[in-house]
Image (cartoon, rainbow, N blue to C red):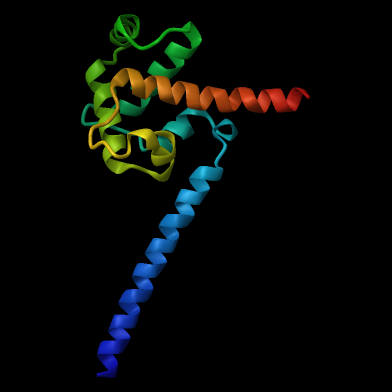
Length: 147
């Protein structure tokens, strides 16, 4: 009988530890300042990585930087630029969908308005939200450093 209680206690301890670790990761995501890392690191923490075509991270990185540097919203110009640079809208969509399935703590923080939905945001929403979130935190750091 003691053995059953010991096994039950081990099981409970393990589940509590997993729950605490998950909450700690969520807290770290809330305290994380995107400006303290590169855009590539930020995307990796969002859960964006390789796709079955292999270049989801690079495609997303290119898309966010292209939109930011050219001051455009995702659309035909972006998709044309993706094609010219060897990427595709399909790679971008796949990277977004994988990140939505993984739902890292940072993804949950950035995209929490979409959490109730089972569907990922559109490509336009995805790129725009990442761009605004990442670059606005970078701008706020520059403002505080200049004062």
